[in-house]
Amino acid sequence: TSGSIVYQYINPLVKKHIFIMPSERSKNSFLSESMRRSSSISVKHIGCGKISDGEIQVSETNISGHAKQGLSSDLDQAADGEIQATDTNNSDDSKRRLSSDLEQAVVDDELTARPKRFSMEPVSSRTCSSLTLRLQPVDILLRPEMRSTLSFRSLEDKNSTETKKKNTKGLLPRLCMRPEYSLRKQMMLAFGSINAVTTIVVVACCIIFAVIAGGQARRSSESNMRQIVEDGARDIALYLGENFDHRFMLYDIVHTIEEATMDRFEGYPNKADDNVPFLDMYTNSRMYPIDSTEMKLLALDWAVAPNANDSNSDEHFQDRWEYYKSLNASTSYGSFHFQGSCNPDAKDPNTNGYYKNCTTMNSKVLAGGVVAARKGTEQIYRQGSDLVPLLKAIFEANLDIRDLGLYFANNGYGATINFPAYSLSRERVYTSIGCEWMNNSNPHDNSTTIGSQEMIERCQENGTEVDLGMYNPLERGWVKDQALDPFKVHVQVYKDAFADEEWLLSLGKPIYDRRTKEFLACIYVGISLNTIEQMLENLGQKLNNMTDEETSTNAIITAVQWNKDGTIIASSRKKLSGKESLSIHEANLGVNKEAYDDLYTAQEVTQKLNECKTSSEDFESFCYPLPSIPAEDDPNYPN
Image (tube, rainbow, N blue to C red; front, side, top):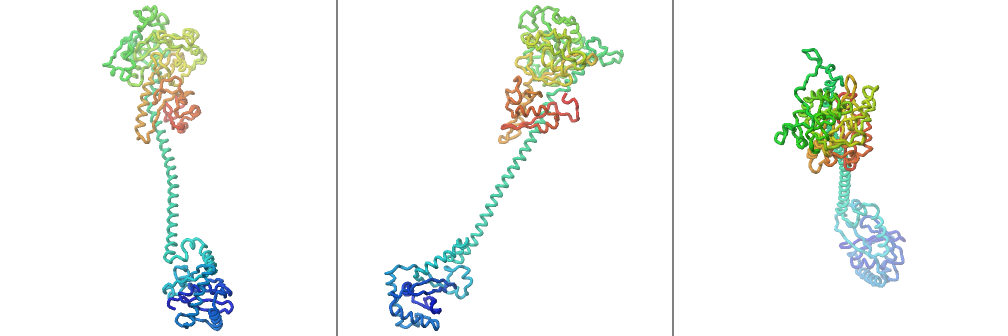
């Protein structure tokens, strides 16, 4: 009872129960060896309300006769009922006999194979699962824990194997529902593990979703930002284009000069003013409103007297003084030049107005000089001087214009009116392209050619170098291009024949007489590429300064001539301007030849403008046409 453990044995021969309560000292040795052989006994462990069966061989040779007799007597009595053996009701002889047998069993146990340990415990939270404990009565669970260990070799092996198999089935029994754990530990492991796993899964899912959402947000932000940048860059291209258009695409000025010249020379080569479209209100006769005969608004180029110096240059030339300071220039009048005009007093070839064997007759305007002896020169000089006030007003109103003028055919001899007035250096030369192009049909009268054969023969042959004293505008390529296509304003880039390493953007248009359809002259409005380049550099710096260092656009602004090659006119990138025949696709600015060809051959300008974007590894390029697209449909655009 006190300090003892009840064990129930079932004899398979008699099918009866035997309850043995061995003393703490002898129970292990007795059951370990004395009952190891000879008969089969089933052992039932009732500690946790479940049965653990094992085969135990009880050896008869190792049990004394008293033990055998006692065991046989117990088994016989077991046929009629159950035997309860305790430390309190056994006789002294039985105790001594049992003790002796157990001691002998201990000795025999040491002589034979040492048994394995088999643990049989009463109701305990350490050896039973929580499910088993919940099935036990409350009074059993509240009893003090009692432990005992028996040495059963075969019983322990079998029971241990089966227990491991049962305990290793499923994830929860392996991790937390283990019999050797206390109820608290099992619950902590079970619910704690579930919470921990759930938390980890939730956190992992949140991280994954956050990464995915962050990637999508980043891609969406990049796409939106790229679209914003593209829209902004396109708007900037529009702004720059309109700014450039307003300053340099001086189409209105060209048309104004064209109309004024046709009005003044209407009926050319008729010298009278009978055909001018102005009627005098007093005499009721036709006459031009301006009469400059007494004003002397034109001077021969070699006779120009300068009216500006460093002290008053801002009044007369403003920012253009750097170009004109080395020339004999004046804003008081315009300059007139025709072939062979020269200074008869100039004996030094390096002197302005020098011409070999020059006499006063060379500069007689009324006679047309000596080289180009034609009285028609006087008509150009007289009527052209009436246009000088208009040229002067345009020059002073637009500070970007370097100079402007009218370049007359003059029956093949050529003649020029320029404002401001300046002297041409006779040391400079240009290369003639000849005048064979004048054999083309007159655009306004297909029955005739632009020029007669006599006019063509008065020109220098193609490839001939000519000094400026014999300058004939009909031998220049830009005049040819204008004359052959009179229905648009020409924007051209070329090297200035009158200055060293000076490149010009010129705007012009040919003038054909309204009545006679005869080719009269070409308009010239010159803008230095240095002026355009400086303007583009300033705009580029302002554009780049609009952003901080991390988002700087490093914008490059380039003006490109609208031709099949895409010739660069000027650029904010240094050393791109002023290079003859440098194409946009050769300048490494992100526009290849295929992209430019596709743009150049576009029919719908407005639609192409919206698509005018090319991309490369280093550049996003946007463009805008010059002149600007008109608000209303104009069939003559961009003429």
